[in-house]
Structure formats: C-alpha cells, structure tokens
Length: 140
Length: 140
Length: 140
Image 1 (tube, rainbow over the protein chains, first blue to last red):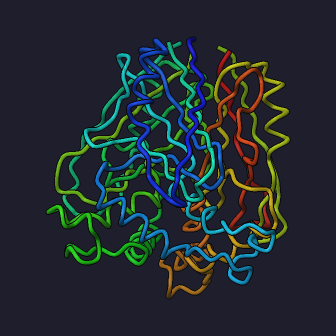
Image 2 (cartoon, rainbow over the protein chains, first blue to last red):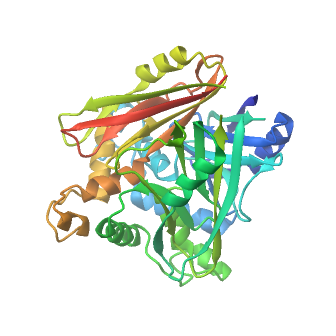
C-alpha cells in the first residue's frame, strides 16, 4: 500500500469565499504514485467545507446567498447560543454542515476519477486567519 | 490489495427521481472478491446525489417536497445567477449539496456492512439525459 | 493491509441528543495497530448522523434549534407522508441528511489526523431504542 499525507495551508482574506483545490489535488495524486485507490480531502477546521461542484462564479454566488438564508450570520448572542462564548461564527458551523466536511474521490490509472464538471473546492465560512485542508491518499 | 472500478450509466426520464442502486452495488461487491474493505459510491454529475436512507415511497415524496422548499426550482435568471448562463438547473446544484455527493460503505465478510434499513440510492435532480455513478471498491 | 471492524451500540434516552464518540474512536485506532490509513465512522440507522464539529454545548443547542426549523417534528400524517405508515419520525430522516451519515478520517502515525477543534459525534434524531455506529479502519 502506498500513502501520501499533506496539509495545505491557506488564508482567505474574506469572511466567506470559495477557493479551488483542484489542481493541487491533481498534483498530489501524481506525486503519490498511486494508480488505483482513494483520496480523502477534508477541512481541518469546523467552520469550513470541502465540496465538489461546478466551477462557475454565478453558482458560487447562489450558494452564498442560499446558505446565508438557511443560516444567517448574526454576531449577537440572541440568535445563536454559541455566540455567547465570545465567538461570532455560529452561522459558519451551521453552513459547513450543509456543504460537508470532506470528499472521497477515486483514483484510477493514476488520476482523479471524476465526471466532466466535478471540481474540488474549499469553502471558507470564517476566514481572515490561517487554516488547513488535509489530503490523504491510499492505494497502490 | 484488490480493487474494482465500475461506472453505472442511467437515464432518468423525469427531472427529479430517486433510483435504487442497492442490488447493483451488492453484486459488484461479490464480483470484486473483496472480503474486507471499503466501497465508495458517488455521483459523477454535480446535479445528482448518492445517499443512504429508507426504501419507502412516502419518505421519498417528503424528501422531494422538502428540498423543493429549501431550494425551489426557478428557471428564470432572477432568483439564481447560475441560470443567467443559459442553464435552468441552479436549484439542482443546491439540492444535491443537502443530500450529498457520495457514500462510503464498509465491506465485511465479503458483503456490504449496513444496518437493517440502510439502502443505497441515486437521487437525480436534473434528469432526462445520460448520467453516471462511480463505484470504487478497495480492500482484500 | 490491516483492518478493524467494530459496532458500537448505544441507547439515547431522549428523542434527540448529541453524543461524543471521540475517545472510543481514538482507542479503536490504537487497538487496530494501523499507522497510516483511513477510518470510516457511520450511523447504521437512517434517523441518526455521525458528524465532526465543535464540542461546545451552546453550538449543540443551535444545531438542534436550526434543524427543528429546517425540518420540524410533526407526528401527524398531514405534513409528512412517511408518517402515514404509522411512523412519527419523518423529520428525523430529513434532519439526518443535513448532518450526514458518516465521516472518513485519516490516520497518520497511528493517530486520528484531525484539526485542533475537530471532534467526532453521533447525533440521534429518533432515540429511546438501541442503535449502532460502525467503525471500519483500513491501512497498514
């Protein structure tokens, strides 16, 4: 069994933003030498997501507006109890559950085995500080 | 390590529908010869989900009504920016995030290791064209 | 390849509650002897979730209130068709989809490879009976 483990650090300057991880993951699959296996890509923070969807800016805007409707930002301690702890990011913990923590992607013939429009993204819901994504590849 | 990789093609005649994948996945696990491992089942399209829940038509109706409430279909370019691209399926990209892209299921003693009522489904949110599900089995 | 398979049984006395699985999963990773690999943790029931987020009671309260807003409990047969079958738990099947069925976590150097605040939980949405979580570890 071959494995590769890599933490990708980043700092998103906005509170919320969608960042492509796709090319970095493609390169790590090549670097791993794995021809047949799985890659796990997960946020290491609980106010961020890794997800797969379309690389289209209009849709990214739609996700943001939709998530804000489902779980609005509200720094006050009245809407969210979590924000009584001094935090202001309860909404980010909720939004992240809708978009998910992780993706698991197949590797076949040494490449990510994805559909035509599948693209791997990081979704930051509480940025402006350094955060990490974990990439774990296993296979042979 | 043994692996099996298979793309399952289908064409759902409705815009939205839930289709069982369960027996096909069971057969592929047997075909793989894997006794102990993992199976990844994922939509290869970004307007569809693979999920595990109850094989009960009333519940499937409830999912559909609920998702339509959370992210209504609206082909116009006003509600969703994605639909300014000429697409009409922005709602499908949102619904799919609630239901998820993939499931990872354990294989034990050569069988899917599932609870009594766990059943693997494909959820189409923008059908009427050929689409694929990927099955990747690894183990030994 | 090494593997470990374990079902964790529990009975939550409330209808809904969040229960930490974290220390049990940590111990199973040690027991498995796997230094480098993956662990799958999934609910074996379709009205429960396994998820990773903050170990903070205010946030857990926020999740509960938020999910109740997105998919309210209603035992009557009018809101949810699933409840025409004699069940009263349709809301639980919906809530579980938001929070997810499973998590896949990397194992590196013989330990769960998690961010500082990542904590593994079980979320019961229809308790007061015995239920199971599956832990499957693969690696070497």
